[in-house]
Length: 185
Image 1 (cartoon, helix red, strand yellow):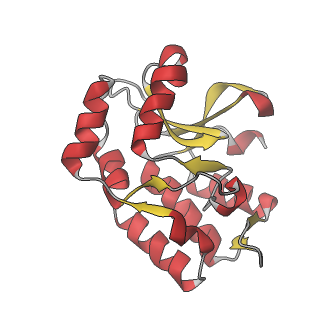
Image 2 (cartoon, helix red, strand yellow; image 1 turned 180 degrees about the horizontal axis):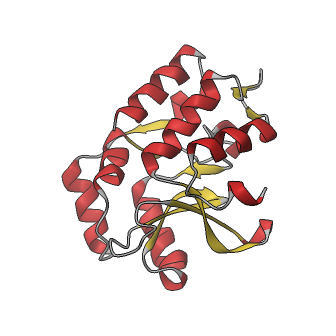
Image 3 (cartoon, one colour; image 1 turned 120 degrees about the vertical axis):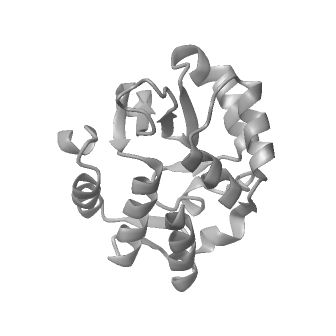
């Protein structure tokens, strides 16, 4: 998935403070092993995502310093597996959590027309059923990259993530035409 390398390069170009919190990626074998523990089959792009980076070091760091495109923390796979076991797996057995705070889930039901789409689930925002937000994991990363390149996403002097929400919504809607979340804003 070239999008992740391009995003990391762009984050480096702007000296994004989030870079220092990225964990090294896992091996493909480690990723597959963790998914076998919860009886889910990850998509190829999800495997590539966790071999690129295994989430962020998040303990004792404000979540605003860990964002790089949405209001959620990219959890290490081991933590996401625990979240799945303890929370999302019961309610949404074929949705796997990638980002947590506002929860972003990937549909891993290969029989679903929404397979590989990214969904937002956030009861605090009155989103009580998963709603499609990004057409795929590569499209989500491409959306983040585009927003950084256009200056829609940035970091303030203290290293906190900033976004221009209206422009984020417009860009996301254009790059993710199959997702319902942006259409309803």
